[in-house]
Length: 494
Image (cartoon, rainbow, N blue to C red):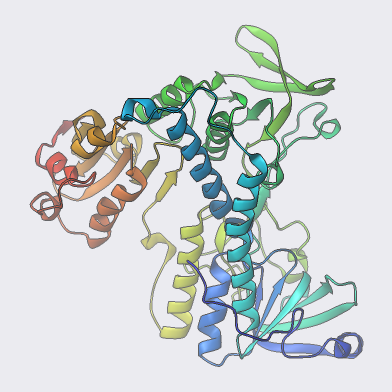
């Protein structure tokens, strides 16, 4: 979701009030707006644009980097690394396709890889900031906001020039999450990496120890294994990505293992310590304790909301036991004029759900629509290579629903385009309600699975019977052309 190019002339800190005015106003006056937007994750730039288009006087407050996690520490920079890692992998394994390189000719330049990643991420960051600061009815403040009452926040300006009080008739929070640091003995005494700091590496870890076998952990594990690191994944569950079906987990662990990634499953980190070569992690397994030696440790064990310093208690905003802001089906908090969007509301940890939060709020407040969080269908991707595309129910969820089920399945060894590419790892599967003929869920794990699954997601949103899709005539040769074929061969599923 790329913003338009930047306008020619912008005030870098505050638009349109000039900087010398701030210190005077902060001491004597509260700046009043119709809307105050805190944070600039995926929901806020577009919401600011929608409010600006309606001529609504709006303040946007950002304490760090414009664009939030996706632009700066998540989707965009990590997928740039995924792309570099794939190029390395393809080059090293090209002989089977008739492209023969002399041994040792494929070299990885981590500095160039980081420069490319920084360029891609930086472009998006700059464009988001410029887009917001160029809006006619929007005043942008670079600083940290904290509530002083339900309508007012105090902003400590990033440049150190002082503080300013800002009030709003409506306030929208899109402050995101950060990496959770687990309570492991010695963790504060070692230089660990998290999703943001690992992106700053321009050298190759000799042995990367990944704590956490879920989505972020697995993506970085494959990235750095392909770059040339030894990689060990420690995971406390019996299988990786345990929210997905067992066959999905097994297939992913298998192909990552074939690339040389080592797994310690059903293992809990007990302690970490520095060594001359880097770090040592002691884990507890069913067979006892075991020490793993590595050069770097990467923590990928979940996310926590950035709510600890917002002063939510002064606004009367309720949080759950994990610190996420409680919202209703239209994203209102218990304080009706305060809304929480994006990861911080716990309703979805994805860029696409954050953007949908914007769509819900904008449609309801500006267009008189009646959109709700409960209208959306769960969907996400795991961007390993090959990737996983998921939508709707898992097999366990479908069984628990008590419905009469049908299932379609096809391995990628029987997908022509995958065979032609020489990328036959994975499978497609679809679940259907036998009585209503609705598509209930799907998983496509294989080449272009993150794209092909969109066909089934669109079918689910259309609320049409699966026969609409099964009778379609797709383009050949493609990955998604086999989806109608799968639906034509559904079988009862218990």
